[in-house]
Image 1: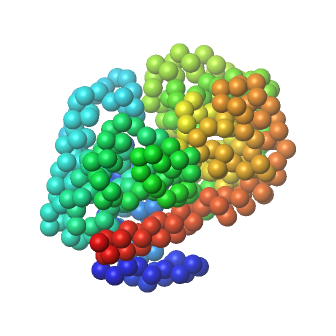
Image 2: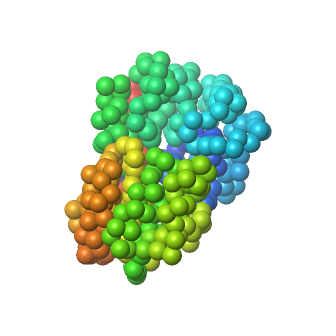
Image 3: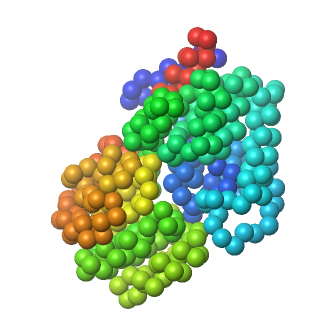
Length: 371
């Protein structure tokens, strides 16, 4: 397999078709409505690579979009757990995921792996990284989180076999003492997030969990005197019941987990999008989605968000400072919606992201051929 030759501005006509294996998160389906940014990113990446005439196989959780031609990871049926499902999984979930990825990596290490030119790992699991050197095809792993001990250990075990990309410079810097990584900002399909007319209310979207802190958005909106609508999957019922639900009322409502088109309409019809991470957000996809709709952003300056929100598209507040966030909301209301949209199209688009990943595939293939 010779390296792919792609010239800038001609990305729809690649010099050679690649056979790409995408390894997805096993915990949530790659399907709408998306549970989070990781699932959305993987779905959009698979579709755009296929549109560019690459051959793409997606290994993903059961229930993923059949239009992607998904090969389901063999995740055993498990008893229902009444608490959290996205972080801090109980032991039986961890064991099932371990076995699912072990089966996949053993298969790819055998004759089945020969059908691929490159493996792009978008899982959060340690096994794909730890076993990368058993594959005949090179692996590119996207770092979607700050360093966590189980991935750090796998990267060290990998001994430099794999290549890495990070979803923001902040994330790349966080991993720098462990491994180097290329900065590839996540991208949004700006056609599926069209410019909207704006409105009177604020919007908050994402997983309703403590580390996303939607309760801070409710408090800030109330102090700013701006009504607000929350939207997203409810993944932590205890947190929602104790921290969010008591703050709901006529000026603060929960719209549920919306399909993508419904969410885009809500975001585009809002005056400002509020983003309130209580942790170092690796990227901040909801901010990019809002900007694509022309909706300015008021956000905590944590993680990768300062790389997404520019001075003419949003206002940033000190993390955890609800009063400052309320002021940021007021300031953001004055920003030009057309500039927000233009920034997203130029800097935060799906096309730009996939261009960069094609460049990375070229690089890892060249590295393997030169070895």
